Amino acid sequence: MNKLGVRLVGTVTNALVMLFSLSAIFPLIWMGYTSLKTNKEFSLNIVNLPTKPVLDNYVSAFDVGDLSSALFSSSFNAVISVPLIVLFFLCYRLFLLALQFQGEAASDGGIDAWHADSCAFAAGAAVCTIEYARHA
Image (cartoon, rainbow, N blue to C red):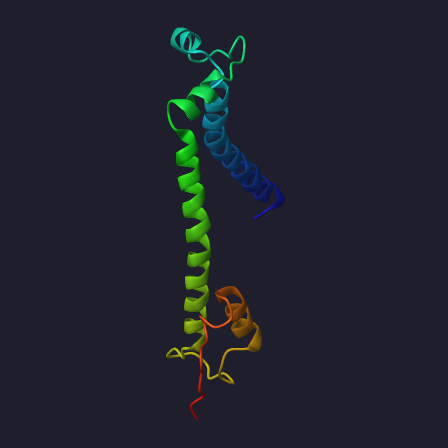
């Protein structure tokens, strides 16, 4: 492919990525400026920018919608689930490293020290211990 063709493919690819990015970012921007409108402004014209930004919508979301308990619940679930998921998949990775798959070249066997130490460190020092015996 000549230089012009490579450049054309690059330009088209970049344009598609930009369009996709705009389609993901625009709804967030629209939601942000719409949240600063009063109910009357929103009813009259959805597209216009707010004439005078109002933060009362956020106050009522915390008061009427009980947003504080929803934020706490989401944060609590994230703080608990993310470390557990990381720990699970770290141990799973170590398990897969210890397996010998058909067609795989015979290695010198075993898990190197870095993997075992990282698992022990992440799991709290003894949850993820793997004993691997080399078979001759």
